[in-house]
Picture 1: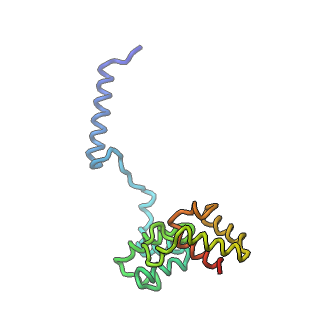
Picture 2: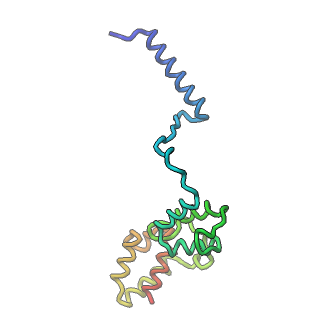
Picture 3: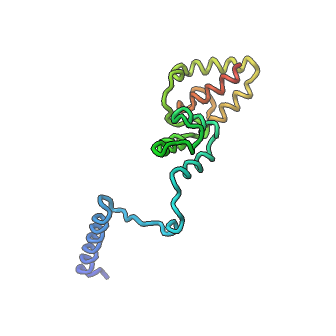
Length: 165
């Protein structure tokens, strides 16, 4: 038993009209946006409070370093309102190893190369710290310096220098 062509045509026309309505009501997207009603009862968190909460989840010394270096502030409370969004972005970028994923290049950073890190690693091994070197590599989720993600070079090199001493 087949569908009646007039009902099928009507269904297709209805579907097209519904899609057009959705597109018109959402601007340029056919996705219907809905509001989360469960969140309506909760007061919205201020950007400053959100930044404080985020900072608590990160390495405190690195958060402090960002605040001092980028904003000349000792605490989050000292930030100017215009700087809260930028500070939030920088602190969000702190990854598991503690370095921002896209840090601003510093003058001393350009001297860090794979060869310089390999030389430091050899020095650490000569000093009997091969097990510490393996732990450091594991901390950065890599098995070799060559495979180390570039975003970790600065932090890895700093810790490697301590091992090589």
